[in-house]
Length: 102
Image (cartoon, rainbow, N blue to C red; front, side, top):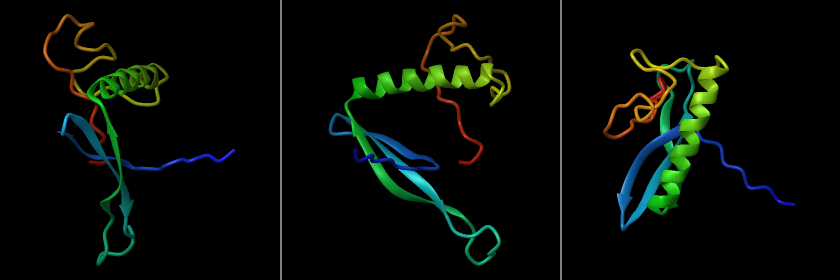
């Protein structure tokens, strides 16, 4: 059975165009020891999905972030708890956790 895996260091940009959510995946290229060619993020793949698919994916990612926090593998950002704003009684839009790598 053929497996098709894609590695990415993160998401470079997320846009809504033509009614579809487009997420550009990026990888880190360059050499940490070469001052002439420092590491930088470079586009590698694009994921395109309908908005409802994106929302389901975002919900799954939020749940995984909560599990990572509970397991002690990551820490919430300052001033945030493991609970989502909706669980905290706050309204408005939810901002996804930001990686310190970007």
